[in-house]
Length: 248
Image 1 (tube, rainbow, N blue to C red):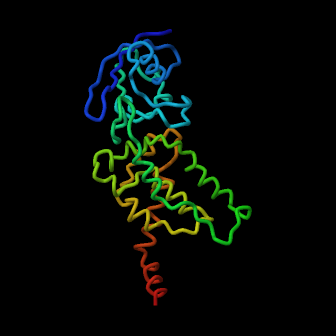
Image 2: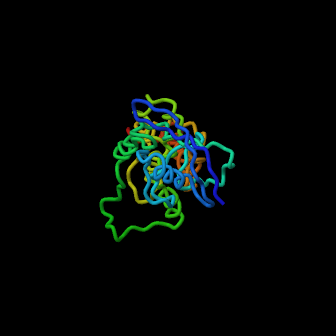
């Protein structure tokens, strides 16, 4: 059974904008993206929104619904009461291009700063061997759909624009952790994580984990283990002594 829902949708661009009120028909079983599409079709044909698969797998339709980062295609209208006003705004951490579409190129710049997978030079592709437990650990991180909700909600860059130069964000710290934990990767990425990617700025509040639509345990399984590896490398007295003796 359908009903008319009250929506507030942010309209504007980098130079400014405002929330505009709309009343849109909602049918049973719909998600917020369905309503946004109906709004485009009936009242606001110039409304900009990024989307692709509508199945929660492409990560394109990231936005904020009532202030919380979400995929519009996975946010069900049944989670709101019929009297509730639903507010849809663009991701706050990234510059607005127009309406609900943001410029997420920051994330691609950070991705390019990470050295690629580096296997031993004498190991041929057909000779790769891994234990199943190592495969499973890496596969969890590979579930990432790059919706950038974790990047958007991380207060290190959400509330401090100046940190973007020094901080890669949880998605790319997770990528560094994945490679650092990979048994066939010979690169040492601990200094990269701490000095270049800003691992020390992360204070493990788990806000990135809370908004991940793939339910990846970013904090517990990637960020904390990566921090432990950095601490072992830099502050363990036995490691320090070994490094001193080795240099001699």
